[in-house]
Image (cartoon, rainbow, N blue to C red):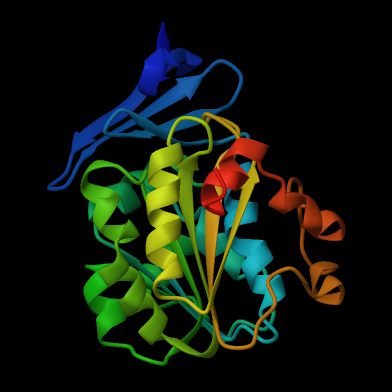
Length: 282
């Protein structure tokens, strides 16, 4: 038995599957969880790989730690999406964080993650019950939540599905403007932006929309297990923050496997033709 996620142009990423653990249809999407031969549990939403248990940090670490270490003092953090709990888990690794609020629209993803996936180590359940002092989990619309909290957050992390279909709203100029207004005087915003090679047009569109809103925009890529790598990320800056520089002293407190703070500059490597497209030189 196998599971294959097909990308454009007939490119696929596949896993040998031992069994299907559970399947559910929520108000928003179809959720499946499999046991794989070599990577532990595999979470799939609407036919697309969200994570594999043994390798999920290769996504969550570059999504969270570069922006957290680049911000001079990230105290208030907003996570939009991230129902599996991996992003919130990584955010709370940072001792500067006083409050991390996670807003996930699909309660079913959270339920399945808490019951079967458990990469969060019980964090989701504690946050949902109000038993985690530094974290709060809200089941609701992250877009609406962001609109009602202007000038509030130091870092906003969007952990969403790919920039196609229903999630396209999260890559729109209007959404970025709401995010910009929700950030404080010095703020960083980050989102994943799809496969560098196979979602290039979506990456370009998201980058152009962010450039219309943020003071500066950075792009970087990272090899993520389970995705059609390299995978792209976009960072929007509000105010006086230099994303090319990070606090290596704070990095020493982190338990990292994939993202290497001492080689932060290697994040910015992009294929030449993609870089030229992003910079408008092609």
